[in-house]
Structures are given as C-alpha cells and as structure tokens.
Amino acid sequence: MLKYLKKYWLFFILAPIFMVGEVSMDLLQPRLMGQIVDEGVLGLSHGGVGDLGLVINTGLKMIGLVLFGCFCGIMSGVFANLCSQNYGNDIRKDAFRRVMSFSFEQTDRFSTGSLITRVTNDITQVQNLVTQCIRGFVRTFLLFAGGIVCMLTLDLSFGVVVACALPLIVACVIFFIAKANPMFTVLQEKLDKVNNVMQENVAGARVVKAYVKEEYEKGRFGAANGELVGTQLDVLLLFSYMTPIMNIILNVSVVAVIKVGAIEVGNGGVTPGDVMAAITYISQILNAVMRMTMIFQTVSRGVASGKRIKEVLDCEPSIKGGSFAGDTAVKGKVEFRNVSFSYPNMGEKKVISDFSLTINPGETFGILGATGCGKSSLVNLIPRFYDATQGEVLVDDVNVKDYTLGALRGKIAVALQKSEIFSTSIRENIAWGKPDAAEAEIRRAADVAQASEFIDSKEDGLDTQVTQGGHSLSGGQKQRVAISRAVLKDAEILIFDDTTSALDLKTEARLYEELKREYGGTTKIIIAQRIASVKDADRIAVIENGRLAACGSHDELMENSAIYRDIYDSQLKR
Ligand SMILES: Nc1ncnc2c1ncn2[C@@H]1O[C@H](COP(=O)(O)OP(=O)(O)OP(=O)(O)O)[C@@H](O)[C@H]1O
Ligand SMILES: [Mg+2]
Image 1 (cartoon, rainbow, N blue to C red):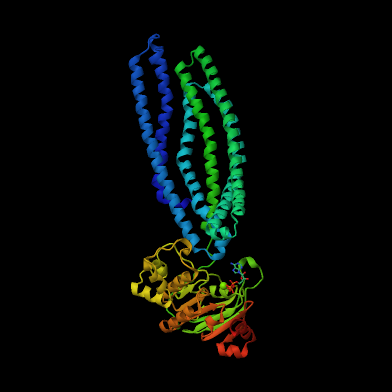
Image 2: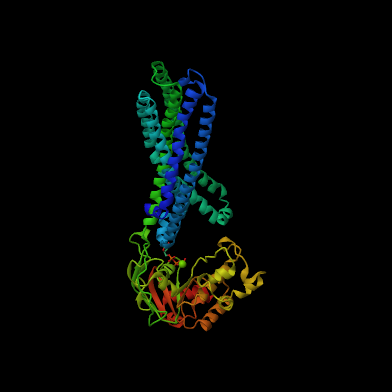
C-alpha cells in the first residue's frame, strides 16, 4: 500500500524535516536553562555574582526558540496530516471501487459489516499509522538519540545512568508490545461483528418490530458489543500496568542522575546547571522510549488494519469482463447451452442442471416454476451476476464472458425480484440507468409500467422524494418504479424477475399490452409464479428443480405438459 504515498512524497518529506526543527529547539532549552542557573543566578565565572542581563537575554532567546519550535511543530503537523489524509482518501476511493466490482458471492464472503469497517475505521487506523510514522516516530527517535548525545556531552558519567535504565525500560516496552500486538487484529474483528448486527438491525427494523424481537436483538447487539468492550479493556488494562512501571524506572533514574551529578559537582567535573539539564535530558530520553510503546500501539493497529484493507484491494473481482464491445448482427437473442450452475458455498449440489434453451429476438418468453426451482438463478447468469459452472450462456451469439461487462449489461435491463429503490426522487429512480433521459421518455416509461397514475396522484409528481429502501412507497408502486427504470433503459433484452407479483391482474395485463405495443422488438423474459402473467407469452418454459421440464406456447403446454396442466388447474380452474 506504500504506492499510495508516492503522490504525497513532498508532504511525506517536509513533515519530518520540520519535526527536526521542533525537536532541536526542545533539546536546546535545557542547555540554556543550565546557563541561566550557572551564570545568571550562581555567577560561577564571576565569583558568585549573578548577571540579570544574561538571565533576561537567555530567557528571551529561550522564548524565541520556543516560538520557532512551535512554528516547526505546526508545519510538521500540517504536512503530516495533508499526507495521511490524502493517502487514506485515495485508498478509500480505491477500496470502494474494488468493492463495487465484487461479485455477489465476494460481497457475501466479506459480509457487509466487515466491508464497511474496512472502508471506514480500518482506513482511519492506517492514516493514524502514517501520521505516527512521519511525526510521532521521528519526534520520539530524535528526542531519544539527541537526548543521549546532549547528556553525554555534558559529562560522560551521566552515561552510566542511561546504560542502566535503558535496558530495563526497553525490556518493559518489548514485553508490553508482544502482549498487545495480537489483540489488535481481534479488536477489528469484534468491531466487524458489532457493525454487522447494527447494519442488519437498521436495515431490517420493520421485521424486528413486527416480530417483537427488540429484546432478542438488543441481546445480540449487547453480546457483540460486550466482546468488543472486553477486548478493548484487555488492551487498556495492559497499558495501564505499563505506565506506572515505566514511571518508577524514570523516577529512579532521575534520582540516580542527581546522585551522580552531586558527586561530579563535588569533583568539579560539572556545574549545578549541567545537573539540571541532565535531569531534563534523562526525562526526555526515557519518556521517548515510553512514547514508543504508544506509537507501536498505533503502528500495530495500523498494520492489522492495513492487512484487512489489502485483502479488499487484492481481491480480484471473480467476474471479469472480456474484451468484446463491438456490434452484433443479431440483437436480443439469449441461448443457454448445457448450462449447470451451483452457488459457491453449495459444493456439488446443482441449482441449474444441464439446461439448454434458446430465446429468440423480440420474443416474449415466460419462465414458470415452483418457488426455489432456480428461475432467478437462471436469469442471473445472463448479465453475469454469477457465472455458469458448466456450459455456456450466449447473448446475440457471443459468449457472455467475451463481452466487456459494460457492453453485456448495456444490452440487458433487469427488474429484480426485490425492487431496489434509492433514497432520491421518483424521477431519478426511474432515470437511474439513463440519467440524461428527457422528461417525455421518463413519462413514457412510467406510462408503460402503469406507474403514471400513482405518480401523478402524489403532490410533487415525479419529484416526490422516496425514503431509504423505498419505504414511502407501496410494494406494487416500488415494483412499477423498478419496471419503469428497466423499460426506460431501452435495452435489447428486458428481464422481469417476478416483478409484477404485487400488481393486480388488470394492471398487469395493461402493462403487458403496453409493453407489446411499445417494445415489440425487445426480447422480454418474464419470470412469474402466476400462470395468468405468462399465459399470453410466445413461449413458456416450465422449470422443475433446475431442469427444463417443458417449453412451448400456452396451448401447446396445455396439450403436452402434465406439470403445466397441474399448475394451471391449481391456479385457474377454480
Ligand atoms: N446466494 C445464494 N447462495 C446459495 N444458495 C442460493 C443463493 N441464492 C439462491 N440460492 C438457492 O438456490 C435455489 C434456487 O434459488 P432461486 O432464487 O433461483 O429460486 P427461484 O426459482 O427464483 O425462487 P422464487 O420463485 O422463490 O424466487 C434455492 O434453493 C435457493 O435457496
Ligand atoms: Mg426468484
């Protein structure tokens, strides 16, 4: 994922450079403070006579350095944030694009909640990691290394304290890091779970209420949330042990510096000002090591999150388009050649078995069969929502796998079994597949779909806003908006997957009449449960357990197909 940083290399370099400025100012302060003590207050080189002028001068110098340090700190922060935010933004856009290209099976495999966590929270963690690397880490490392150098230049004997304290504190840091590291991946997984429950409940709120399952769902959310809090507490508890232990080491080291300093002052090796400076330096050094633990915490979380985002970015779309986007001689022909299909999680069990059928251009083709027999699965193979496991699906005599996805799906308009309605106006919902459609075209599509009447009865007509999930429309109204959308696309092949189930028979009959009149040349594939919906089709295929049981016109089937007659009798005879 480093390649995403390339574009922001300048920010990536400027942030640490300004940080060097900020840290240098921090390292100079103790020296100047020492000078104030030694010369300004104690007057060591002037026989014990202090120098107020020097105190004021050095004090002003210190203020100047602080201001410059502040400026550098601000600039470093600005560049670090510009770098990390833009970096995260680019990754988020790519991750989103990748998620959009996933097949249904891939989306199901990741789960919606996990994909949302990955594209939001995980990317924030990676952004924090970048900021820490170019700011926090640089600052800490410079304070640590610079502090040691400055301290040793005061007097080498202070090095003894550093040499004793450092291994102890480093051992502590390594211990805590090793303990905490595996917890971060677990933490993100727990967050996925919480998001999944949340997402399911918001989307399915109506069902939850209808079945009075609020308490049950609260329990489910509580359990997922409890697991998240538990893991979070484990991490925080671990770090709450760490700080006091580190503080003890730090305070003992300060005492040791004072002791060593006192001896050296007695020997005339260092001045009291040097000892004061050394106390500040040892605090800076050990604090830097302690801060490393915090930085490592961010880095660990960032790396764990980075791996999860990489899984998304590296996941090749399982359905990839071919290269053909040219014109075809035939338009609107669909052919299944010995097609078998099973869902990826189903093993050997076939949903469609050895299915062969040709649907001719301009034909109105009905598909009938019991619930769960594989009707939706069959038509999902035409726009490649899924790929056939065996055999071939051809559109206009070209294998669907040879088309670019855009070219293939451009030929097909589908109104799905579950009408997807977006939270925008009815107009935009209808023009979803053809945003530049003129008002007259939208009106015509709505007329064909028998949607005009209800649209006009709304105060705002086509501009009526629909709530999320289309909850402000009735089931039949949603279906008609979805049908208008499919019809407006003016595609070669129109697929209605049980899209008229919520319409009364009269409205449905009018819809099919209009379709025949306005879209005579379009191939129409109509899946239905009711014989009345497909009775007038040119041909009807009856599917039984994923196999083609019979095919022909209504009259032919009535004559030749026992299954069809059975369905007819059960639905229409009485
Ligand atoms: N994404 C999926 N993963 C696994 N199995 C699936 C999936 N979608 C559908 N199935 C299974 O495949 C079989 C056929 O489903 P399909 O949706 O094609 O039936 P259908 O004929 O359209 O039924 P209906 O008339 O109820 O819409 C069913 O047994 C169903 O459980
Ligand atoms: Mg179906």
